[in-house]
Image (cartoon, rainbow, N blue to C red; front, side, top):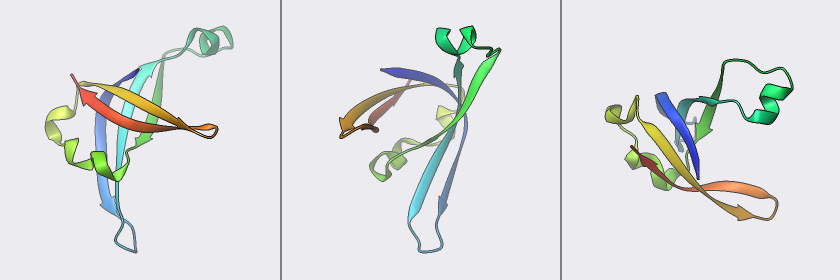
Length: 84
């Protein structure tokens, strides 16, 4: 399970009307990243699958997101997210 603190989010529709939701997150660098010159915290954008968009609201900002993934082929996909 992967954990990241939620700083904010964006919900919007593409030109074709497809809905998108991007979480703005912060998390510590891994030990490997620190050994190779990283310092501070890692900022990332996490694109949520459409079936999880309804979980995103202003109350999640400041909470920690716990992501569960599934592997398909050589790629990891977010399967579920819980906010605590």
